[in-house]
Length: 87
Image (tube, rainbow, N blue to C red; front, top):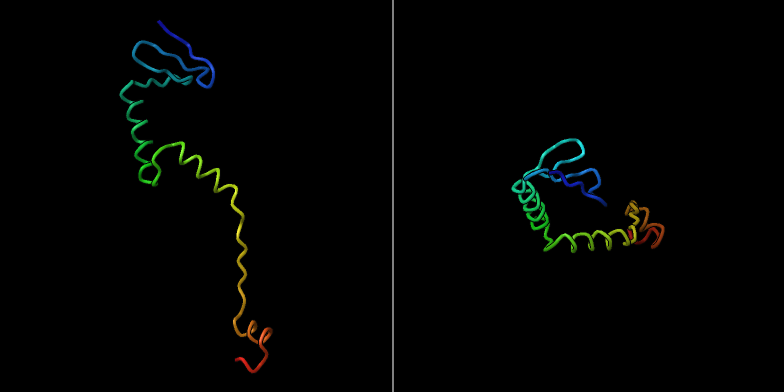
């Protein structure tokens, strides 16, 4: 018996003990558990307790203002702002 999924899993189906992709790739429950575990460990290594916290920090990072970096020769800066006597 085959069950077809809807929503974001449209095209995927459950056939016996497998989750089958639209391309025909079969995934066992053990494989899905392994993928979830790996995702959790990658977040942990990145310093996040959960996926939600990681997504929240990305949203905050996207709202931060950009920093403009200006490189100025120190001698020119001193001369312009303090005159010849400062150098």
